Image 1: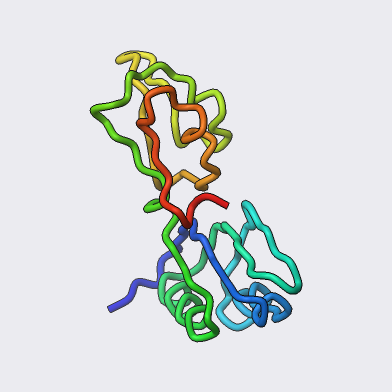
Image 2 (image 1 turned 135 degrees about the vertical axis):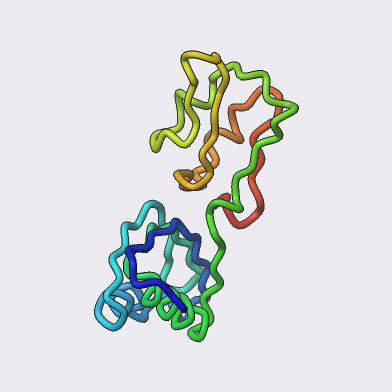
Amino acid sequence: MVSSKQYSKIISLHFSPDVVRRPMMYNLAKQFDLTFNILKARISPREEGHMTLELSGKEEDYKKGISYLQEHGISIQDVAQSITRDEESCTHCGLCTALCLVRALWLDEESRKVLFDNNKCTACSMCTRVCPVGAMNSEANGDF
């Protein structure tokens, strides 16, 4: 049984030129009672599009909305899968924490270690660009 409690997830969408001109986000809100916060987007009328957004609503409606997007040819990736950290490589220098606007990476003052909450991550990939030891990694879909 699917829960009716509030559910929220950050996802990455990739879509073809024929979908760009359709009101897909409007339909998510109107038909499935979902709210969305666009975190990052690159859309061109005659090219493919990419969008990272936080999608929220009842879990049942969320699943219906995701199915709707997939039925219309939009590929979806969970952003939490886009950015990963190699715990053994991390030297806990803290450089990444200065660039993480959503505080998915932060310095624990007691242990002096960098902590990472991939559920807060928006896959901006800034951490992957500045990590001096390459401990932060981005999958192909998370970097656009």
